[in-house]
Length: 254
Length: 86
Image (cartoon, rainbow over all chains, first blue to last red; front, top):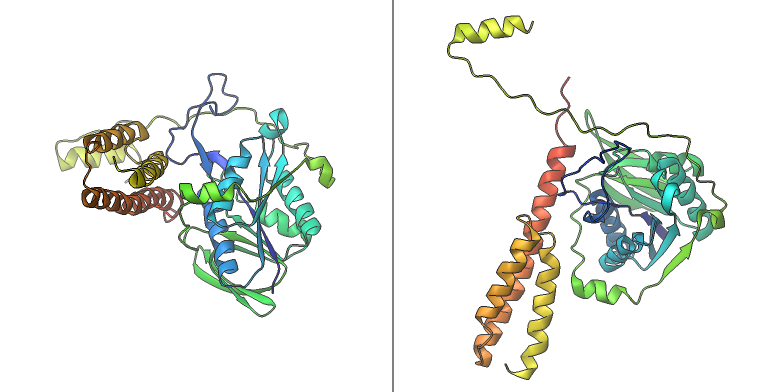
């Protein structure tokens, strides 16, 4: 296979930031909060770039959907080795309701337009934890999918994927074109250093809107409320084993 | 400060500053320490000494990358690889 790989990258609130819910409980505070590329997306980019370095594929295209700032995330992917970027512009209310279904419609449309042979996505985003986009994209394109991939190898016109499942590891072989979603152990993403980011400024990022791809991004979901997780209850110390047993009995645990 | 090194040193400072944004103990803390470390050596003129300091700075880049990366994936692993409780 000597084709083109699309990699989806999402701009999310940085993993290290303490999330705060807005007072009106409508959503999470994002203004002035540090954002970065979703860690699973970093792994996806790394896998694509590795394939290109091994000359298994010809071109890596990084795709991101969102407002102007999504371009920063694309630039990071370009700094990691992607060849060019596509920024699908979605702003305001539309961006707030943007979710896996709309993204997968956009990815599917782009895959057809760019004649991609492989789509690599992170398995889930650390902000919504949906774990749906890869699966939906594969379904829309009627392509096979290798999700939760911890190992990917190209074998002729097929791909061997080792998947992390509850019972252990599952090895499958799927046809190309296909959708792969990256799990934590797939690889070790390289750092996008400042010199590489500077060099990446020369690479092109194409701009377009969902309408240009014929995609309807109206959401079928409405977020009713966002709440913080309940405060952790303080533990209780007991003096004797008898106390412990009686407390356990009270709680109905023995 | 010798001219040929000015570019190198500034480049080093900028690269370290950029990496410091992901510093586990806080980027503000890192920036302070970085600035004072560079300021401490601002009057060094011996080319050999400058080379050595720049080399130390470069190896710090690798250390930082490894540290920030390790921290990130430690947190990720904890959040996403816990065995499911039945």
